[in-house]
Image 1 (cartoon, rainbow, N blue to C red):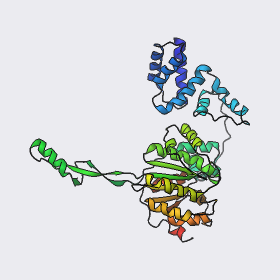
Image 2: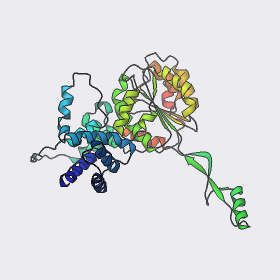
Image 3: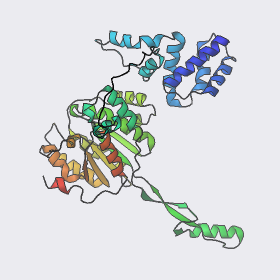
Image 4: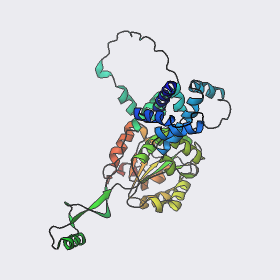
Length: 393
């Protein structure tokens, strides 16, 4: 039983490195559960460990993959990278969600090399920029793999509190501004006299958020990072609807609801067939207006349209569908990565057709632009935000 307890401890450490919240109490419960079953039965052992170490439904897939990998061969994770290189030139099956994290968690850390004393340099501190500040202003398209990993970690910390809107619902509140006559009479009938006036207040809640994101080839690097932002927003608040479009419109709202980002993006990849292709913005907006606008654009919805405005069909039907979308929501914000250029001018047909029908035109190319977007959505929409651009059409 001593060897088994040691294996359970190593397995729990593996799960923690892969992202599952497994603590000492879970390890003790797992050892007690294993003492009550037949250890020769693999199914009973897996069930006992999963019952004591998994606390959410979305953690099940990662646990099952870790169980198969650890209890079959504790060193299997060291060969994951080599296997990937061997199958690089073949069309392999898509790896299951969480496999990359498990391979990294099971990899044995190398012995650290002794630190080498760098040569002393004298640098003017007034001319240096911290790594965090450099990352905030870096264009997504210019980021390397390490920069993208750090940017995704920063994006998960962003919170999107939209401007609160009053609803028709009323909630009891002793300090409310409205008098509730019915509640006052009911309380008086119970006591025989009216002792106090019942009051209510109007319930406020943020409006629905709808995101329409372009996944054409020109938007590839930006979509890769923006999906992490959309996943964080979808799991932080309710009433968030997300659509991707290239040559067709795809609703990925249900897929992004999964709390594990790796599982969510794997589901999105299977649900969207037109990654990095052409762009038919007019057709995509027409499909949204026809099939989805009445379902998701109620109660003062805010719409984020993420696209560079480069339409393959030459803006056919784009102006009419943009006008209908604008009239169906309370605030339409266009996020365009081309605005990162200082000398940007709306010259393409698609951009000129879309600009008259948006409330705000903002860049979305860096972490700093995402933070500015979060701050802007938490305030009332400016009334003259589009005067500069509409004057160039």
